[in-house]
Image (cartoon, rainbow, N blue to C red; front, side, top):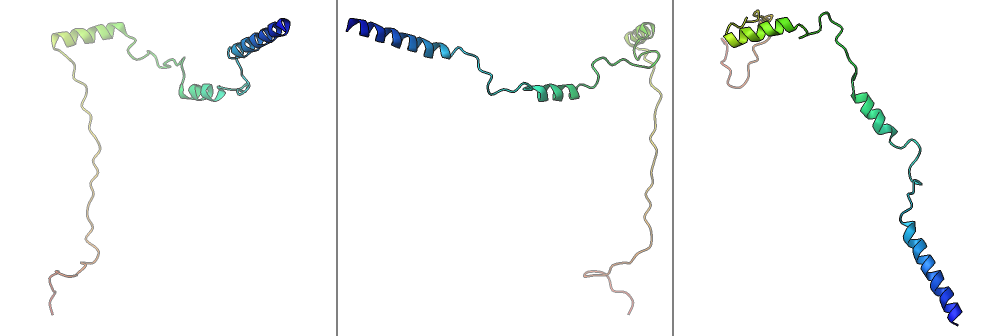
Length: 111
């Protein structure tokens, strides 16, 4: 009997070790090969152009001399005011046609 008991103890030990180590296995059975593609696609569509370059000549703010002169004028209180801008005006006139809509409380006309 001691040999059978030793075999049983060995079998139980191996079974316990196998069950314990099965928790360390990384399983990807629930993930597909294209998992995460939608997230990457959404991220890519939200980035306008990561390598955008200004096409104008010169690029805005590119003149160091002009920027230095502007800072110097700002420090000395001689800022050049921007040209004034105006908006277009739209006049809305009321027409004189239509009915006078007499109702309760309206003064009575000549009788």
